[in-house]
Figure (cartoon, rainbow, N blue to C red):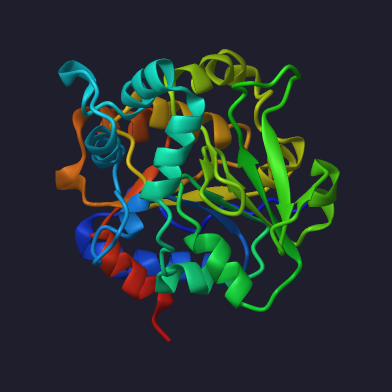
Length: 291
């Protein structure tokens, strides 16, 4: 088995960011890095969806008012709505918020054409799926985390092929590219892992990796992760990042502005051994997708 580690140093200051991004671009083109995408990829544009957990919590509150003390906490706000107005209401509200299709960014399109073994996307939009569809490829599929609300069996994920049809998870082994959406997504079936109760069993089991599909665990083993557009200011976000990247080759990199990191984010990057490329996300996207 060939193990692909990134060629970059663990910490890259702002003045060296362009050279570092050129190296990252080469690693992506060679298929040696797994992208780990977050909603801040959209933050620079005119978008129709919330691009932070806090903004999504407020969007839910605008449609179904929640207690003031939890108004900015996505998972607690979603639980409040689920507990008082039923799971179907929460799903309907999430679907309404994310109904407007998000146009893929240049980075989404670039990644879609590179036949990467795995792409992790941590927000609820369908932009990465759209980019893969628009690429004309059919050798990919998507695995999504799903809620266990109303389920009477052990189920953590569902799989969908490139047409959006649900398929057996075993089919994923044959896909060239797996799009892994650990929190679910609006497309193709409006699966949302979002409330506190959704995460109770996931967080109980995630340390032993049970909720993460075996095919994802197998593919990550040979690669480093590139975190871009993803924030880690909340414990939930840090837990998922740590566990999804667990037992991979290491040497991970994150693209973010050091000055904007919270203390917890900086500590997390340090403890997880994630090197920081100190650069605005928009500038990084431009560098990674330039001809």
